[in-house]
Image 1 (cartoon, rainbow, N blue to C red):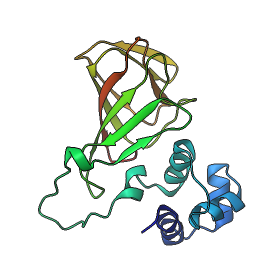
Image 2: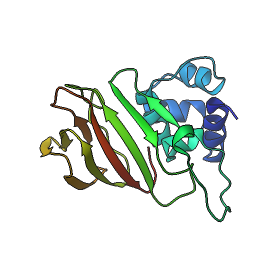
Image 3: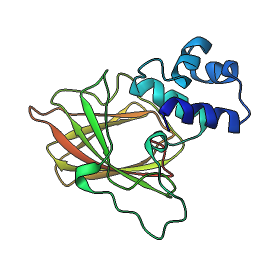
Image 4: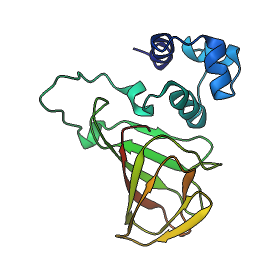
Length: 181
């Protein structure tokens, strides 16, 4: 199933019109209509807005998992990867598709780059572990500097984003509950 079809089904399941979703996201009704018909490429920022308005994890749009499976395996070679066009960050979903109480992501952030142009929030809790390099996590306007091996936990309802102050890419392991990326 295509992303646009999943978005339309989520919107309809929540009893929202195109106008309602447009108002909640700040995007135009015609743009959302084109998204639902898979006629445009959608930026990561706009997918986040749409998923937040629909109260759905971002990665659920890319999942075909069955909710009743005894276990699920996500192979390193087949992980879902999302790269933001507006930022030099790549997210990989480490845990298999949706239907979980938490989600683990690996992020690679290019040198001297932010993970997003503006801090954003979502209804979750988050822990960020620096696997390689250094990172600055901005949470509600405060900046927390982390070195390799350091971890920060925070309430994701506070606007946040990540920055790599180094000269090489940094790698982060991000755990989110409930899934909302």
